[in-house]
Image (cartoon, rainbow, N blue to C red; front, top):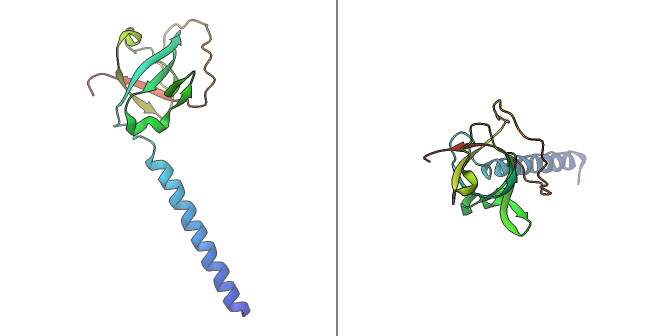
Amino acid sequence: MTKKSFMRFVVMLSIFFFAAGCAYENLGELEKPDAARTCIKVSYVAGICGQVALKIEDPRYAGLGETWNEHPNVFYTVLPCNAPPDLAQRSFFFVRILEKENLGNCARCEALFEYTGAKRYHIQVVEGC
């Protein structure tokens, strides 16, 4: 193999790995819901003082959750101040996952909810999806 052929091979191999890496990153983006438009059906699992574990009821988004305390498809969140007070009593409700926290301004108790999982999202509770 000549030096020119070897250099061509290295360049082509580099381009291949770069393209494969970009495709992998884009695939990861496709798995995330569109925060501005996607309503995800969830149910209340446990919580205290606005810190809650919610179960994803829509199988299309089950991958966003994890198993926590033997509950599948769960994630942790802090409810925004404007969330309806009866969410724990509802059989299900809808949320949107947000890029940034938007809790609002309200008084919160200082109790700590012990969620040991890694899946944590900022949400907005959505009525009428």
